Image (cartoon, rainbow, N blue to C red; front, side):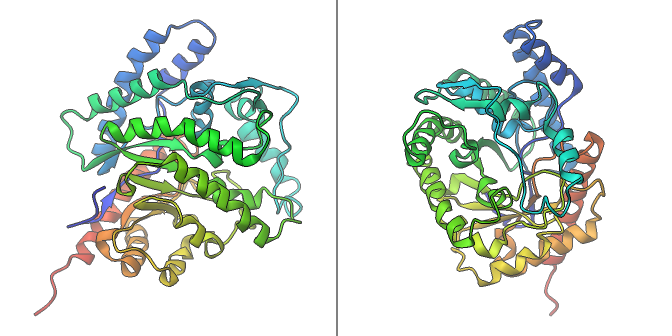
Length: 395
């Protein structure tokens, strides 16, 4: 994995706005009105376009926008998790078994949250509804060889003729996929390890294709806000260790310097007043066998988290990817602010070990025009930070 050797490199978390034609094609495919071949042909073109747009925005470490990840095709919101149902066996839909959604601060905002859940996940046939009502009823195994092969081939083809530093491909962590859907395995550990062994095949394919593997694992942080208020911090911390063990099992044999680990506090556009503090879980996060860690830094609830890293014993070769633009606001961050956020982290871990990123995926979270504007702003801010951090020292 490349570091910021002579300037601050730029990247993002994964999901990017999908073109209308791709959303429509996915819908038609689900309805039986389009063939897999038609979808595959459109995907090849769409991935080439999204790679080109990232380069035009000044992004150095690019991906395929997660365009090949879709469960229902109903929207471009949430494919980071829902796509796995297409690549695993042992599941079925149980419409009446959706777990209730509640947050620790819902009593503070009793009118806001019901409306928010309805807007982001309550629509009939939405990806969120399907995710919440699909459960594991048999042994899990990986069946996505053809789909991951298609995605990797599309990204390789899209990279031909463009100038980038590196490319990454996202994959969900076992714990973030495991959201209470187990109806088959006798224990949480058995289920998590079965997921880990299955997902390992996808992880290995990504690395073998020459790409950096990004593990998406918001569960490590966001489940505190989704837990009952009676759960203590000590109990919460204890529960996270199984997640780390399962993720490292899935990463078995993969060099840490080919892995970056993304943890966030959930992409829902809410107040986040009960997010677990980074300081409570940073030691657990560091247990992942990864060479880089992607964390929120643009979201105002976590903008001051750079201070936490001052007290962390950070390995010499570890990279931090702070999110210096946020998915949670329509405001376009000015380059000056982005540069300041980057500089804060550079002062903590060193300029070479900072890559500027986003808080979370931008696709489906904000208007496409704003998503691309944020990536351009990210590049501008990184350039400004580089000019300051690599400024010649006066004689």
